Length: 114
Ligand code: 5GP
Ligand code: ZN
Image 1 (cartoon, rainbow, N blue to C red):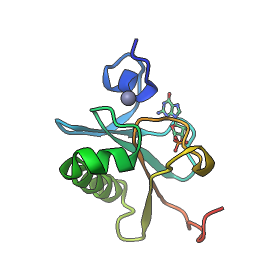
Image 2: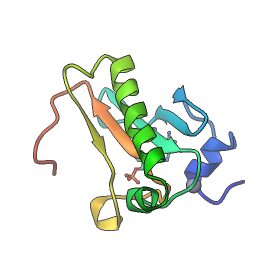
Image 3: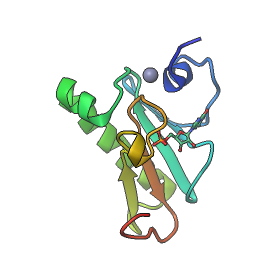
Image 4: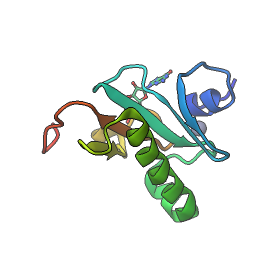
């Protein structure tokens, strides 16, 4: 079993509801959804934070954003609006240290966030 929760999902050791998969990206529904659309987009390769990914492989970060937009379009929220959130560090609510973008949509999203 992988030590990292999301590496375990990539390895198929923990089940997830996948909505999109490419050779380098996986997108699956959040287990505790905060909006009608709440999908996590991750690189299959392990990087702890978005900053670490950006420094190591900016192209892969671009693929994550492209995948997030495709998920939003598939979910029917790309026109009404959606948000991609990268919680970075414990004080911002990051609990899983395998970079993930939260794709949120399907309801009015407050700004600024709490
Ligand atoms: P973070 O708080 O690190 O930004 O986001 C982690 C997210 O992972 C949370 O929204 C949480 O609900 C989600 N999560 C935690 N464990 C699991 C799991 O086993 N499966 C899925 N699909 N999502 C999970
Ligand atoms: Zn990982």
